[in-house]
Image (tube, rainbow, N blue to C red):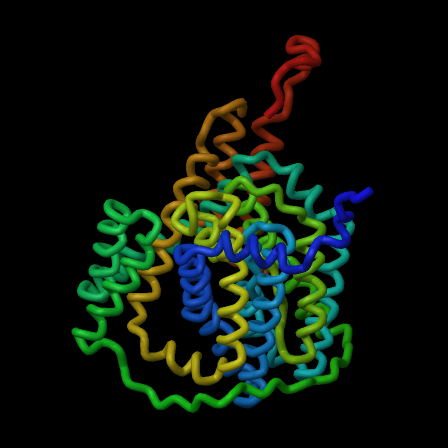
Length: 421
């Protein structure tokens, strides 16, 4: 008597066939835009950190290679595994921290500190401790952190248009027209019209490109307490508060039940593996996740995971040619990338702002604490080298504890069934 084969004997080509059916041009484009946005601004922060610390061109190229390949492999594998658009990138606030901290230590000690950061992040992830801490924070406050991270990108569009009215202005016009007539391809329309205008206006600078593959450099890690205290601990804090928390919040706000243990564990493993090649920290991304999880990626939420796979593949290609690609990005008008990132994040920004101020079942005091969180996060302050997202959460939770603390006897008046914040 015949029977259906068990799940373990399902032909391996079945997931491939499903992936082929789910593949779409819009999701592929969303992945490409995410990589373009990552390589425009965040890479420049890394290059500045390398320059400030006096790293050689070989070590700098290896650093960009390691970040790109590590992010790409993790994006592609996790997106395919979970069927969710898992976006992984390098820590932007961490790179900013290294502008001043990296030069105080030998590079091998810095690599050792990167390894320690990756191990600590892995432990926080797989134990579920990070997810529990994040879940304990009221949703409006988490949404406010996310909105505070995204808002400056959209605000900067206005300045970009003033600075570069033809290119950035054309890009904004392309986005608006795209939203009106081709909503799924609005970002592509913006990118296309901006690029054509930049070419016609002669704003794209010619550069000499050497299309040779980047060769990674292996640095054996050494460990010193000075580097661990000066790099590992601050890097762990800014990466967790400034990247992983908003990254998970972005996935949740987009409707995905993200497994924080799996995703943070995967990014932690990748951080450890690629640290000896120069990668400082890999983490869940918030900004590029906003691009991949938006309806413009695909109307069907179940098919947006293709954007994560696409992003991963583009990361890998870009990483293999990281040296000439970084050179090529220097030819793009600055206002164009700024405007592209801003318009691509308008949808996620709208959603996070709505969650921040939506009354729902929350007390007005919770919403007030959320607004305080938003204001502090948007401020961009960085006392002690720790990014404003961390201070925003801290300020919001402090306000929440004071404003929402039940008064004496309130429990007896309200009873056990009273609504919680």
